[in-house]
Each structure stands twice: as structure tokens, then as C-alpha cells.
Length: 310
Image 1 (tube, helix red, strand yellow):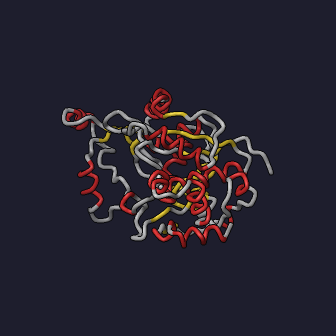
Image 2 (cartoon, helix red, strand yellow):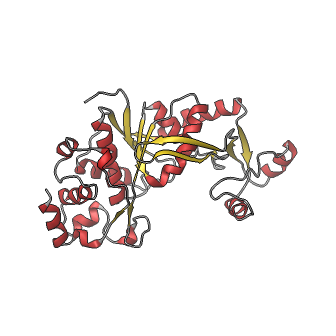
Image 3 (cartoon, one colour):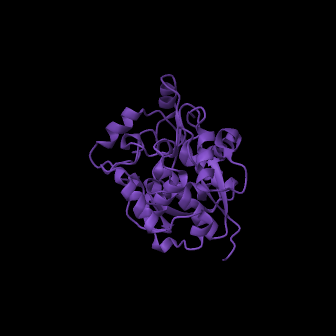
């Protein structure tokens, strides 16, 4: 196996327990990193409100599944100066502007003729200084990137070439908190992360983040956006789908090894410790469709099916 002097990572938000989809992505991120000789790191993305005890519970759950990491976990809240330094460099380069739009303003703009879904229309891009001064009296501004391109193409390990819009996205919210799209780019660069494995719902964010990485003078990572876990209604997995966390399934008598086996089967991988799974892991053989989590998976019949495929 070729050794690569880079790193992969898993970066949960400590807002609650990890559900099966989160755990599946964490396992995949670990397998991708370890199979390429990279380090594997854990980052707690706690810039938004964190729920008491959630971080500790998530770390315990990941460890119980068999994941390990090469350095102590870091927390975004402990690294605010590095986000501010990056924002200051963008301000100095004339690449940011103040935005006073509310969510309602943006939602209404999105319904206008010729508006592109999910793309900021540039409402505040060319305000005069006097206009900005008036609006500052009404509400504090967010800071948006003055993008110089409309779209960017990135390479994804599972999706191939993907071209997505690059609009004037927020880099600092109007409450002063660094925005996700900035923090993730700065963190990945600071930690030497050159491989990002995460849920497919974030694929559309990759062009924005790769573009920002270029402006900050850091390399964009290699991406692999993996299929999501969905409930039987086709929506993203959530508590409405019943017992979808390790704690809830454990309360029903399902040990963590059994839950791990179910997750691995959803990826056509054998049950067992992750060190053994690593020996047969091949990204090219991964399913490309979402995983539909049915309650029958956790029934005695479903578990016997998993056991037969060990």
C-alpha cells in the first residue's frame, strides 16, 4: 500500500447523537483514509450551538464502532483566530462585501424570474457606502465573498467531474460567527487534510469551497461524496424514522457489533472488525445509490441475513 503524507477526517456537529447515516459516513471516511495510508483525524464542528454531552457521546460511539484517530480531536471554537486571519486577508484583497439581506429577502429573490435555485443573486454586491451606512443602522451585516467565477468543476472520487455554481456565499454571518464554507476550508488546510469523504448532500458545496481554497492559497482536497442514508419515505434519515442511533438500538437489545454489521452490509462489505474490512475495501465497488433504512433490517430475520453473509 502506497503511503500518502496527508489526512482524511470526520467532522460531526455536536448537536445530538449520530444516526446510522452519520456513522456510515464516518466508517467510510476512516476506510478511505486508512486504505490510502493517510492519517485519520476527528474534528468537532461546534461553531453553532452545541448540545451538552453530545461531543462526548459522539466520540464514544465512534470508538465503540472501531474507529480510531491519530491526533486528539480539535474543536472549531478553539480556533477562531485562524478564521479571522483568513477573513482579514480576504478583506485586504477586496474580495468581501457587506450583506444586509434577511433569509426572507433571499427567499423572495429566489422566486424572481431567471433566479437560480440556491444561488445568491448579488443584491448587496454594489451598494454605495451611503446605502451601506443606512442599512448598518437596521441590522449588522454578514460578509460575502465577491466571487470572480460563476461555476467551478471539481473532481470527485465517486461522481467524477462535477460542475457547480460559485456564488457570493457568506464567509462570516451577521452574528460574527465564521460561516461553514470558510471554516471548513481553513480547518482542512490547517490540519493537512487532503481527502474529504462526506455525505452526498454536500457535493454542491465543493465548488464553492475549492474556489475559496484557491483564493486563500491552499490546495483543495480530493473529494468523495458518499450516498446518504434515507428513511423509507425517501427523506434524509432522522429520529422520525424510529431507532436510528446506537443508543436507541442498544436499548432494544442490538449490540454495537450487530449495528456495525448492518451498516457494512449496506456497503456490500463483510461484517467484522474494521481492521479486517480494510483488507477488502475497494471504493470502486461501493454502491452508488442511497441506503434506504428499513425497520426490517433490525428484526431477527434481518439480523440472520447479516449473519449469513459474514
